[in-house]
Image (cartoon, rainbow, N blue to C red; front, side, top):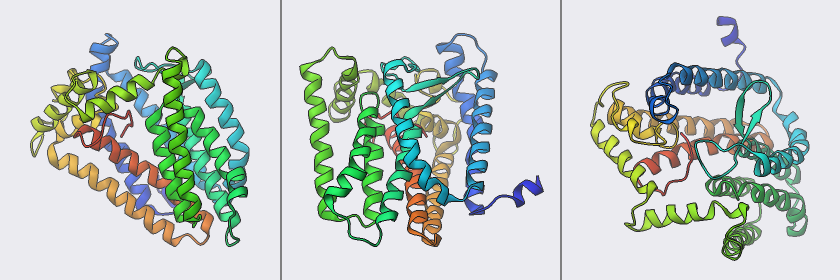
Length: 351
């Protein structure tokens, strides 16, 4: 163990935060999975979900370890190679992907032989962020022209987002927002950036308009879900998302300051997405405001360490890599927490 720790490079504080998040995740996942074990699947076996979570963490940590051993400048070239591969995976996901938890969208691919599914949009986001960082660092300090940047940067970006959008609007919006932030940090001309944002909005409106012209087309099947979630957030019209939000707020209110105790959540039996989209509500119910604020503080401190790491990076590509790969993790967690307390409409973003 000591030898392994000595082999860890980079910011040791970030490693510590990752370890804390992994360790803390076991109890909420084990507790919330009873919803799936007893209600969703009917087997009553919560240990299988815990073991599956353990396997995911182990695979994730192994991947993090080996990725961090590779000098980061090698990823500059890999992103250009990886983008066409990502397009193929996203296209395959739309056509043949797996539907998880009854959602009317194919977002997952089953890995052959090992029985593990992964969300291709997550891989696409990682490759895309590295691709954008590569482009911005390659052009620096030369002036960026709109024509060249639109062809070399934004067309690949919009192709990727266009393949994600039909199945997952919130992920598309999050990735686009992070890319806008990344290009801003990378000193992309603001006059061009404003036009790109406008182009993105127009493209989204065109997609929405096409969904009304061809309402039965499979690629527009999620549009009604987006509409209902936004309507539910802005009005008092009751629907399934309103039910989940109400149960999440009951869970948070029941937790009080100190919580009901680990594994003693009541609302996990009523929240359909208690182990994913609304797991923060279960954490607050069981661990109280102390646990809820503790998780929030942990992510804020992790964000602070990402800022420090970006500041210390000795190249523009390194700085942009930290921003592009680190910040989305924090913002996704913040979105999940905001949904649980009804500051944002239901998005499907996990903690």
